[in-house]
Length: 140
Image (cartoon, rainbow, N blue to C red; front, side, top):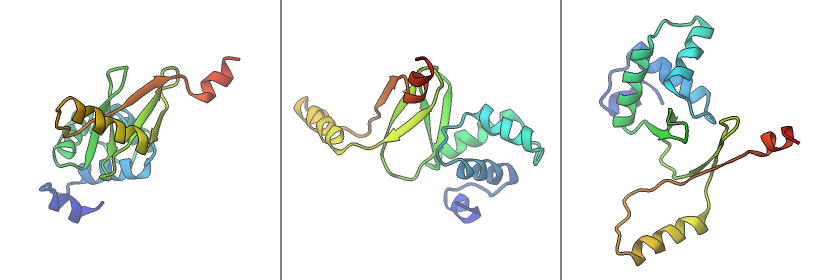
């Protein structure tokens, strides 16, 4: 995503917006909180962007459909770029690692259940909480 994409989303291409977008793009497998992004900026000494600005930009990005916000079990909001492809999440309750997956059988079953109850599904999310294989092997 670049300046043109921001403009298409109705946002000016300011330096903070571009830097936050760049940080999310450089960490495609991460679900980053505003604090995580702030730490990247503090560690790099690249740019001085305040935490309040990061929160504001992430909220603007969410409203524009650029990012998706998730609130996993710990209640902390994390963000990922919205590439328009649905996926679900597995969250490790020990280390906080997040794994994404897509399962067509689960997706079909959710549609069937909604239809069975006369519910018009407009969106959905599935979070599976547990202990990842790394944490399981460390505790043995």
